[in-house]
Amino acid sequence: MRRRSSRLAYACLAAALLFAPAAALGQSAAPLTLDAAIARAIASNRSLAAARLALPGAVAGVGVAGERLNPELSYEYAKETPHQAIAAAFPIELGGKRQRRIDLAHATVSAQEAEIAKIAVDLRDRVRRAYFALVGSNRRVALADDIVGLATRVRDAAQARFNAGDVPRLELVQSELALVESENEASAARGEARAATGELNVLLAQPIDASIVPADDLSRGTLPSLEAAIALASGANADLIVLDRQIAEQTARRDLAVALKTPDVTAGAAYTYDAQPEFSHGYRASVALTVPLFTRHNAGVAVEDAELARLKAARDATAIELRGTVAAALARATAARDQLLRSTAESLPRAQEVERMAQDSYSSGQSGLVTLLQALQFTRDVRRRNLDAGAEYQRALAELERAIGAPLP
Image (cartoon, rainbow, N blue to C red; front, side, top):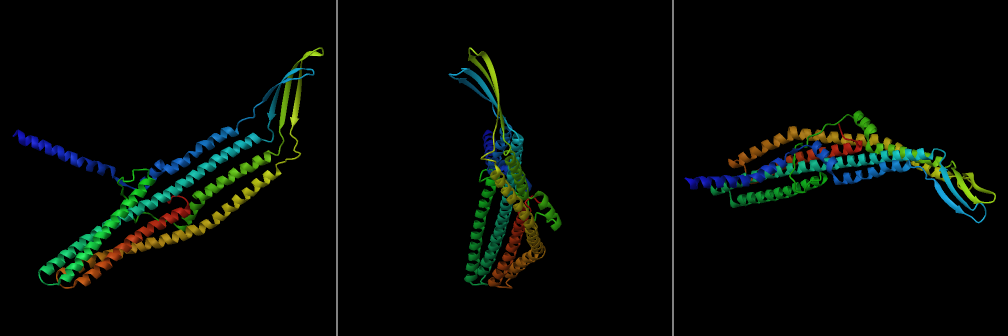
């Protein structure tokens, strides 16, 4: 009795050790939605994290811009009287140069934040494409497995009819060849699914072999109206926001160039001594003004004005082209959605019915293998086109979101 109980305990322990990794894998492979994938990438992606490292430097630039010029302290010893002097000079900036530098630094921070936001939008686009590439790959694996199962049943039916003497061996060999080809396609589909998983894991900053179970399907997503899409693009397009921040930064740079045209003043004071017999202690004061004789900074202002005009022209061109780009992307996405809906609602159910009817007809001896294989090839193509339609719809949505330059609502 003891021996049996000890054996039972060992068996339970072995089963626990065997199924523990599988349970852990099931927990780690919880369904992942597109929104959760994007949020994870925004929080953990290494390229975006590297881009964010530039922001503290830009923020520190505000403090640098607000620094005031240090006074200059000097000691003089001369042969003539007074023999010794201690002097101090205080540079005074005029024309609001310090404030202009601070304004430029703040504008630089805003421009840097806009650049980081644009990188985040690009990352969102890459994650969306990689996510639905994985969804499509998994669908292809499922389709390939279904085809393998169907080819197996066809081979079994051909084997049964061959054993009964109803068909020649040629039909059995053809069915076996169809099974081998379907197994090869299934193997290739699994390899593509592993590659798609690795690409998405890189964007999510996860181990490249981490298991991902997408929760969303290829039919996910809704299309806005043209007016709503254009309004969203006009107010939230990342490219336009970057150009607006660059224009603000360039305006501050131009204002600083104008402020540099104002000459600065240096105020000085000195304590003199050792001038006997005239006096023992004395002082002197001075004021120095930079004379804009050779350099007036007019060329610097012209350079900044030219760059400001270029940025404004680029912003206007981008805003004009945006409407046409969004309209074209929306038209393609609408056509892809309609094709997917028709394929799912009409073509796919009929293809599945044809598969059943063709297999039943062959199994009952009412049709030959060639007719069955042709029917199966046709229905396989219909199912693949349905899968391609879903993938094309998601690509069109990604292009629309990229054209808008902001996440779709």
